[in-house]
Length: 202
Image (cartoon, rainbow, N blue to C red; front, top):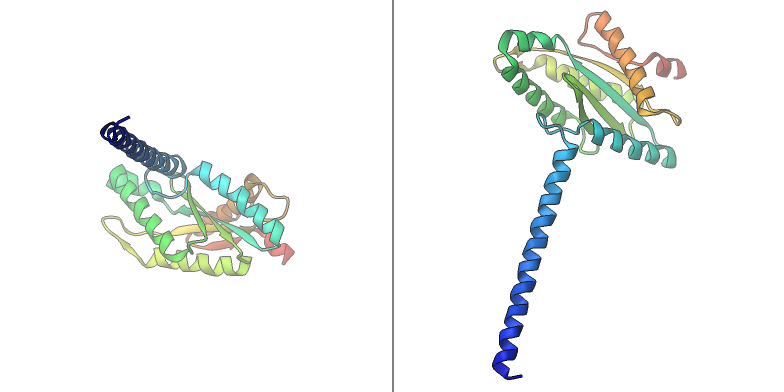
């Protein structure tokens, strides 16, 4: 084989390798984009139900293994239906996006924030006692209460908190947090309440 032919084949090989590398890099980026789409809520960019459930399993396993505390917060926007009824669904969507940004400002990077559905949010707090969870959640409640939202004005939110116990499933934990949240709704809204079971065990 002549030197010219060898160089020609070598150049073709390098070109093909570069083309394959470029295609592979593009496929990796597309895979990452698909993973983000499949794990996040389209409106808010927070974790969706599937990703939150998956993360809960991981964090609970870590909590059990290292004997660290883990808490969950259930949050509901007070009278959110009025926002949609008075200002329209588009403004309602913008409001939910703003609320999501407020949550990200207060909670830590290690906390897991998810949109559970409609105006309901779940926040998982690793390595956090029920007392600290209450304090952090009160800061969030106050921050929302004091903020004047564009077009919508003043709004409030209600919260139920529970500690994750060793044998809890996500459904069981949500059940306790939801009951605490219901009690808040029944007694004036715009409050934070710890689940009765957790108060009794303190």
